[in-house]
Image (spheres, rainbow, N blue to C red):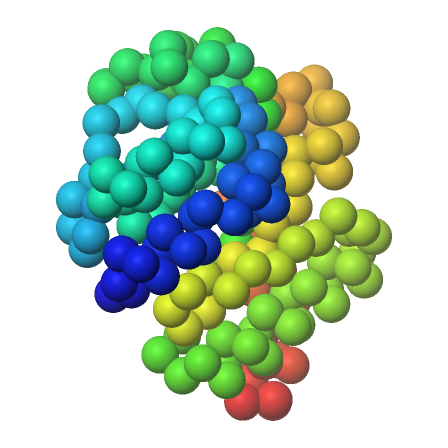
Length: 179
């Protein structure tokens, strides 16, 4: 685990604070204290200066939801599907590549990104997860407004699972060859 001084040095950067607040817009934010303690939920990030204040209080990492919400603070601790569908305004596709051998994660992430781009996905982000892998993201805006007669926002969590399975199925031979 990183020391508090290193954590503060990172979270006091204005560019980091601004990007974090921008990324957290319409998302629930989980705040982790140390290795196993999380803050109250639901929570949000509204102002860049809040990030440094939270780091001073011991927050070591911030985790945003894949789902985009009309009002994340309206989430209850045990919502039903209907309530979630009414509050959800969208979702980002997040594929978490994490292998015990870092080089395998790197190869897999490369193949996933190449496959997404091959299929016409232009807005793909890749972030080192901080452990032994990568988070590959596709923002909700990259998806069509609806699929058939169903609003795309209402296809969570089924659509991300199907997309992940589709990508997995289509890269597995090349992944096996490269590993």
